[in-house]
Structure formats: structure tokens, C-alpha cells
Length: 484
Image 1: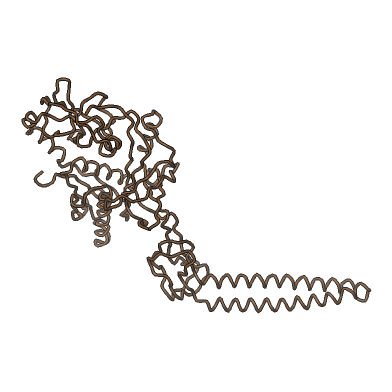
Image 2: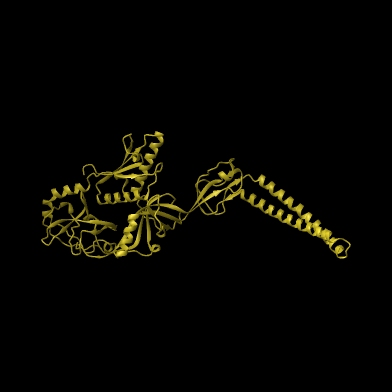
């Protein structure tokens, strides 16, 4: 293909995790005994549905007492009012003293205030009785009950369960400080055209590789860097009317709407990963193959965006690249790319293919280069927080890079191996090591790596001479497939 500059749609690919857009704590508002769990754990509940019932009898008794007190105060007010009505005309005729009138007025006002207090006590008792029936404040997915029937509930242990709203759903992902700085730099110098944050569309790819049918949009971008993770939190909001997405899922999120200005894109099969990095085969003016080192950016459809190493007018070989060697003569010809590939950022001008005989003569050297692209490399270490099996943003970014390397080298497998701490409970440490390895495996599958290409190895035990942080580590190693 002839390299040409054009605006290339950019799709940013990240690993994200779903979160309920509103997770509500269901708490008791009064102290007492939990009589019954009404809802089915894990089921969908609707706003207003009864979830728990507390013992009503003490609160009903308190309400009856408050109502009786109200009736008593009402009678006292009636008596005080009647007495005041008798005293007023007598005091006007000087038959009673001013003190008698003042005392009657004071008694009537005190009785009226006592009645208001009694009325407030009735209202409070009615509220407390109503609080014994605990309902769902929102429609969503219920969690398990944290308290069993018969438990005593007070202010210190009032959390009963959670309800997670499923529609809409949030998808959270992170950008490292370097990624954010690069985006700002590229936007400033004009190499990247970014729309307003709310106009970036988000496509969701599920763990099984299927594309979620609803498109979301970026709803929030944190203005400050997290001191704990060193990343910026970004959040997409996605419609979830059927409840397909559940909180805590790992997904791939693809952001659309940005353009790479005056960019160069080449098909992925033209890019070869060698021991010194990525390279392509170009055809010089004498129609001879030359190896050209390049730096790749993001994926775009079936293409790599090339950030450096190629220029407009260069001719890039996109087929039969494993049969080439430097200086091999080629017979280039252009193949028109499909229209849909051009619209998606594919090879717009066609492909240059080597002459069959010359390529065959060079197959020995070229095949050696192909093997290098799939050769074993050093492990990519991923570090977890102590006691945690959740990936942080830095590890997720590293895994995305591993997934890209695997996509560029279909014959390569990936080996996941963790480590167990030598201190503490051996069984608990082994469970944690397995959980961390499973988290890495799930994230790779979400990123598009086939499960058949992933090999899980038993965690190794950390010894005294190992670094202290090794017990928090999972190694991801690329290795060629058998016979590759």
C-alpha cells in the first residue's frame, strides 16, 4: 500500500469495571428484633417493595401510649379553656383579681403546649412503627441479607443489605498520569482531535467477546489525580434496561469520537514484532524490500496507527511478509481495499505483495524473523495491594499492552503464574494467589485473548531470599506455541 496522510478515527481501548449507578444501603431506622426477611436474596426488587419486617409490638404499644397521653392532654386543655372562659367575665367585673385571670391564662397556655408535645409524640411513634417495615428505596438488584431473622438491630449494626440500581450502569476505567499528559499534549499540538468529553461514545465488549447492544457516553472525568493509584478516574454511563450488565464485571470499553489528524495507518498484518520492537517491510525505488522500524500507536479497526517511522509516499508490504529478507526483489502491485475497510480506517490505497519466486527464496531468513516475533520474553509483573485480588489501573494498562502483543502474534501463548506468601495461613495465601491469577486471566479474556491461549500455572511459594513484594505479584509471560 502507498502510505498517505489522512484523519484516522481513533478508538481508545481500556479495561473497565461496571458499577451500579446508585447503590443504596438498606438500614434499620429503629432498634429492635428483626422478625422476618421478606425479599428473596439476589432478586430484583422494586421501589416500595417490603424487604424486612421488624417486631412491631413494642412500637405499637408506644404509639398507643402516645395516643393516650394526647387524649389526656386534650382533656386538660379543655378544662383549662373552660376555666379561662369563666374567669374572664368575672375579672372584667372586678369580681376576681387580675392574678386569678393571669393564672387561668397561664394554665390554658401550658395545657395547649402540653397538647402540642403529645401530638408530636404521637407523630414520632407513628413514624417509628412505620420504620419497622423496611422497604426498597429504589428499583434494583438486591444483595444477601447481612442479618438473620431474630437478630437484635441497633444503631451500631443497622446495615441489613444493599440494593444496586442497574439502569443506567456505570463503567469505570482509569488513565495513568502519562496517558493523560500525552492526550493533552497531542490535543494541544493538533495531532489529536478530541470532542467534548460528553460526546465521546463508549462501546462495551463483554467477557465472551460479544458487543453490548447499547452505546454509552462519558459522564464523568475526575479533575484530580488519585494519590493512591496515580491515575485519573473516568466514568461512562451505559443504558442497561434488560439488566444484562451487573456490578463488578470486567469489560472492555472502546471510546469513539476522536480523530488522529494527518495520521498514517497500516494493516495489522503488515506490522511485525521483533526483538528490537515493531517494524514493517517497505519497497524502495528499486523495488527491493527494506526493513523499517516503526513506533505504533493505538488500533483502529484492523489497522495500526503509526506514530513514527513512516512518511507519506512510502510503500508498505502488507502481505506475505514472512517470506521477505532485506534487499529481496519484489514485484509490487496494488489491491483495492474494500470500501468499508477504508471507512473504518483500513488500507485505503491497496497492498504491495512480493514476487512469489523471490519471496520463496528468502523464506528461510524471513521465517526466522517470524519466530522471533513469537519468541519467549521476560515476564510482565503485576503487583496487587496486600490482601486484594483487584487490578489497579497500572496493571490494567500493562495487561492491555500484553493483549495487543498477543493480537499481533497469533501463535503466541500467555502463561500466568502467581506467588504465595510464606507467612500466615498457607491455605488463605494460596486462595488469594489463585484469585489474583484468575483476575488477570479474566482481564485478558475481556481484552480479547482466547482462553485456549492462556496457561495457568500453580502459584510458587515465596522464600526468605525473595523480595518482600513478590508475594503480591502475578507474572504474565509470553511464549511461543508448541511447534511454533
